[in-house]
Length: 104
Image (cartoon, rainbow, N blue to C red; front, side, top):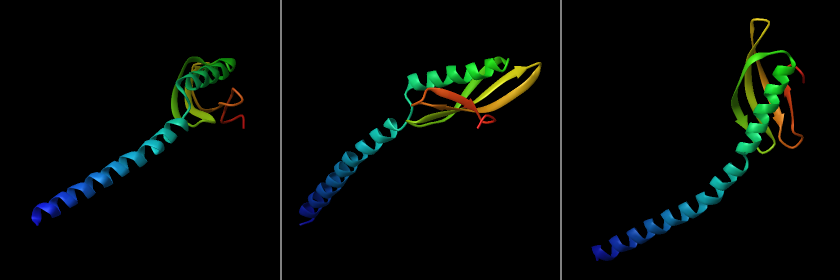
């Protein structure tokens, strides 16, 4: 009788594991869909650098902090007249525009 019980418990465990794995797939896919694509992140990086360069910043660098399917947020660093500058830049994926935190 122990053999039957072992088989039953093994079958239940395998079934629960399969159900868990099947349910995890769509959730993981949704997380990736809610993130900006690599192309959109590069567009955001270029747009934020352009805002900085329009302010006469030199040696501009960017660091992505957050992204979604609607926006990309990054920190932008550079120098202007010898002084270090740092601003948060928000890029709207749908409207294809960027602005610094001091513009809003």
